[in-house]
Image 1 (spheres, rainbow, N blue to C red):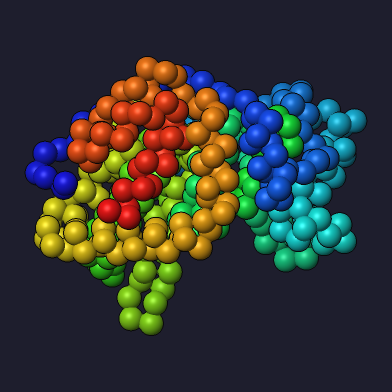
Image 2: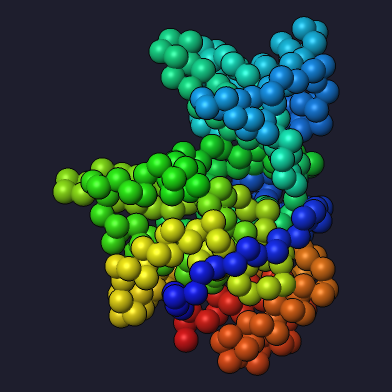
Length: 347
């Protein structure tokens, strides 16, 4: 799987279609406590008076802008954002957010979702945190739910009609890790390579696409002997949307090639198969532990539209050839394809 060839630039749809949340998905979200009424909506945040570009420490444009609101709107918006943060962190205990303030609201001008990033600061100790407010997209919600159920990490988010609120996923962005940390002599390269293999396998099985280096982070945890690594996805817009099989394998993105080189250098074929089997076993345990919720999600997804008919046909054909499994050819939606893909871990 990790041959000597260098990955090519993969062609991702420049403008992904946004899909609405239908009645069945809304019922699912309500049943599992994801659908609530929020005090501030995405549309409220779009009514800023002006915006100032945000630059990084090297004076490079980040493609984010700090939104500035009229004084009459600022108090209402900031109070609502603090309430949302308390919903994310403390089930809405209002007394907790009294000592917090909103330092800034940033708006992303790049990509499909155009999210808002809110920086919350503790008045007592200047500790800060972030969360995001985005437009609702059914594909992204399915991606968040599959991540919550199938990955080693839990995801905290809520939906209110056309607004999606997500907590911040902490870590070093993959592109920054590759540039600034990959050659750290104190880091065990074998462990980094191992994590790419496991992440690659997990993305492919649950069909999470577009995992270029800036769409995931490295979560680094010091251990009593060495550092442990975990790669966490932070962008779920491309959950089972594209038709090409390779777009669901992070190893084929040129942005990830330095990590692929580590796999080629430090892991044997037997090592790769071992780590894939380890991740496969963990996925089986997670699907069994959350069988009711996962089945409810896949049933909803199977009857939903989250891609174009052409992409559905292309993906089912490519996966049928990849697995040598004709059952994929009878899939008529991306939800059915995801279910068939997850069924492969039991074979």
